[in-house]
Image 1: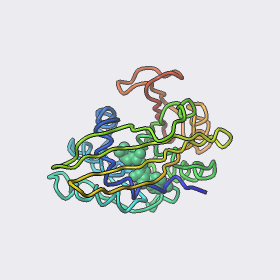
Image 2: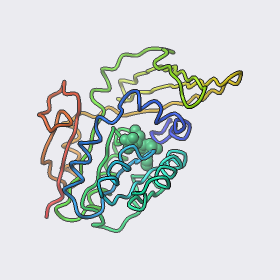
Image 3: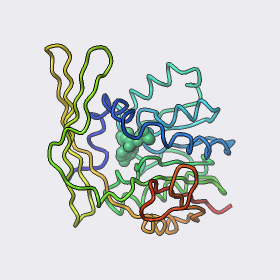
Image 4: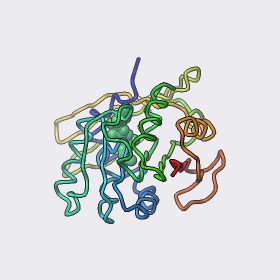
Amino acid sequence: MHEGWQGWDDYAPFYDWENARTQGRRDVPFWQRLASNVSGVVLELGCGTGRIAMPLARIGVSLVGIDRSSEMLAHARRRVQRSPHGHQVRLVRGDIRHLPFADASFELVIAPYGILQSLLRERDLGETLEAVSRALGSGGTFGLELVADLPSWSEYERRTSLRGRRGLGARVTLIESVRQDRQKGLTFFDQEFVERRGRITRRRTFTLAFRSLSVPQMTRRLVKAGLEVTAILGDYRGGPWDRRAEAWIVLAKKAG
Ligand SMILES: C[S@@+](CC[C@H](N)C(=O)[O-])C[C@H]1O[C@@H](n2cnc3c(N)ncnc32)[C@H](O)[C@@H]1O
């Protein structure tokens, strides 16, 4: 079976290029606001290339980022080394189902941009939420964002979904297919990145899989892991949530 942590190593060289054109920095101020109220260390689950971690470091937050993909982490590491705030970020290679940190190490744990949907089985999600609960100090906050309404994404085959320039003289095309396995509640993105530089063409083909999770499902899982849900937000400015909201954000607290 395809696992949710697979595909990211191949995606890594193109992740920032694609995200600059899609998600961009829309969610960054939200995570900055949340983290700026915290004096202790913040843990980011699935920190990837540092898209969120570096802006948090820039406003003075001390952060540990954990990710299973060595290639995504290699990009983050380059950012850390280049930044004057890099000393505030520690990168750890590991799986979020088994967090390698002492209990009560963090005041805030964040799970941006659908990372919990890379956990394709109920058991994986349960283990991760329990690990998060242990890693949080009493009174600590867990903030997560789900990718909204994955099951409603229409299926398509080999659509050219992005095209543009990268660096000096390279042209990149993303050809994408979307498949739904409604029985298992999984959405698969088959991606082919084609990079042309002069006469040289390079192709990378890989699949990313995500699990559908609704906000009510997620809140039940958080309560089961011993956390108290304190807010459900529908946008990055803190507006109310409903099923059609642009963002699905849940905040929870560990009892003090
Ligand atoms: C959507 S990216 C998010 C990266 C970053 N947080 C951001 O917002 O740009 C998801 C990241 O989670 C990582 N990941 C997926 N499953 C994981 C797992 N089981 N343990 C650790 N990292 C995982 C992937 O390698 C990838 O870097």
